[in-house]
Amino acid sequence: MDWLGELQAYRERGEAAVLVTLLSVRGHAPREAGAKMVVGLQQTHGSVGGGNLEATAVDRAHRKLVGTNSDPEVFTLRLTEHAPVEHGRQCCGGEVSLLLEVVNPARPAVAIFGVGHVGLALARILVTLDLDLHLIDSRAAQLAPERLAVLEADAQAGVHLHQAPIPELALQDLPPHTHLLVMTHDHAEDAAILDAALRRPADGLGSGFIGLIGSGAKWTRFRGQLLSLGHTPAALERVTTPIGVPGIVSKRPEMIAVSVAAQIAALLEPASRSGTAEADTPEAVL
Image (cartoon, rainbow, N blue to C red; front, top):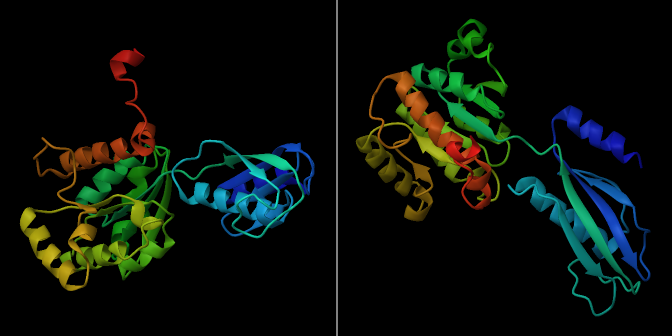
C-alpha cells in the first residue's frame, strides 16, 4: 500500500484520516512491526493484521476522527485465547503495540444561520480565524458575491455558502461538532433550526455549541414550543441564549458580533476543548 499517497489524497480532499502503525511485535502476530494502515471515516487502506487486532484499531481510529482529541495514541493488544476481545478471538500467541496518529485533523467549524446585519458583522471577524465558516441563509441576496466581498481581504477561514430555502436541512451538510449560531430574520426559521439541531445525535453534530440570538421573551416562547415537540428540559439546556460574553449590552450589530466572536473563540481554545489546565495568559507569554 502507498500509505503516503493515501494520506495525500485525504489531504487534497480536506478530510482527516488516522495512520495506524504496528510499532512492535512480541511473539507471533499476523504482521511484522512497521505495517501500516490508513483509516478514514468511510474506508480503510492497507492492513495491520486483520481480525480483532485490526477491527479494534479501526474502532479507535473512528473515535478519534469524530472526537475532539487528536493527540497520538499508543495501545497494546494480546493475541491469546485468554485476552478480552470485541471482534473475534486471535490466538497467534503474541502481543503487539500500535500507534494511532491523526493526520490533517479537521478544522473547527462554525455555522451562522442568518447572514443579516449581525451575521455579516460576525462573519467578518470569524473569517480571520483558522476554521471552516458556513454561512446559511434562505435569502439568496444575503449570500450575493458583492455583499460578501468584504470577507475576502483577511480571510483565513474556509468559507462555505449554503443558500437553503429550508435552512434546517443544511444541518446535514455540516461536519461533526459544528458550533451553531442561530440568528435568522425569521423566528419561525430559528425555531425550526433549533428543533432539528436538538434532534441530532449527541456524538455527532449535536455535541457542538448551539447559540440563539434574542431576548428572554423570545426564548420563553421557543422553550414552550420545543417542549411541546417532545424535547426534554435537559435537552434544552444545550441551547445558550442570549449569546455573547457577559457585560456587553449594546444592540449595535458590530458590538454583538464582537461579543459572540469572543464566546466562540473561547470554545476554540485547546484548553477549553480538552479540559487541560488554563492556557498561558497574554502577560505570561510576553
